[in-house]
Image (cartoon, rainbow, N blue to C red; front, top):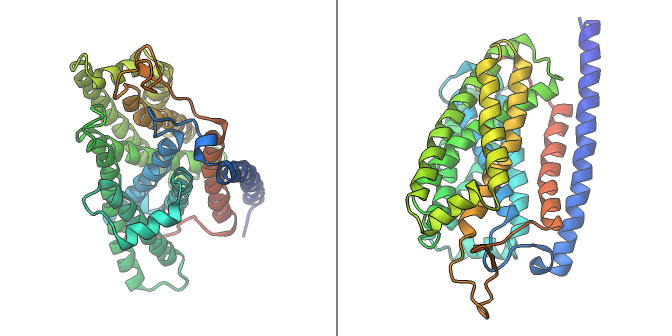
Length: 395
């Protein structure tokens, strides 16, 4: 029998998901208008990227969404394939969330590429297998298919024992391909000799760690939002496990931050040094100190460490703060390395610099395309919350 309290909670939950779906539709409308402007006027007219900084906000938001998706797939794989019960309790939400946010990421790269359909045809007919960016497309495409198969399995009616075994196998490959996709994305940048701040294995490692941390943070945030910061006691152990995973991930991120900055400063006066200075004292300093360190490291870690273990609301707030700070982390990762110009800004060179650094600030249309990605996530995910049973009763 359903109690009065449960009925009130269900009504409140439906009202909340409806509101978030409406917000998502508004963001879709904004993003749709921006997309139309891109198609009508062209990239050059509406995007602020330039010859010195050819990768801008949309590459950063692509990384923001898809790496979070692979972090979720990693956590889901721990539950499905390796029997981590605390994560398997959330398996439905994890897979739905991973699938939807990966689609959101594809909207960003789709609007960044001039001719995505033509590119897909070339990729299929004549791929350059020595190019890391080709494998990025392959791995994320496989990841989308694996998540779709996993969705089918977990929502399949009248499941058999063989379906659970299949889910374990699919979950393992979701974890494996997700790590490959994200580490390969780091290698897309790490293979660039001409951009020393990118070059090396650092970002292949950092993106995987920060992606897993982001997956934990988003799960903490969404569960608190869904339950209006009153997470059921049956999920407390899962939330605590996510909090520990998120805290450990932030700890490793601090270690990686330290050595990346120190090693870059040691290369003075090279481009890697200039990129680090752009973060510490230059045009990206506010992003770095407030966004990357305060919001993505200090505040969420402090909340996790100093809040009571039973305080689920605090964990949700830490997750939300981290996801806000993570945006600045992704943006700085993409932009910082491009600010040191590859040639001097001499008169007649066509290179525009200020204090020896190239300049970039996203256009309004680029921000609106970012809104498109969030619109896709909010509409699709909260439609799933509204019409599908995402609470996993047993595993």
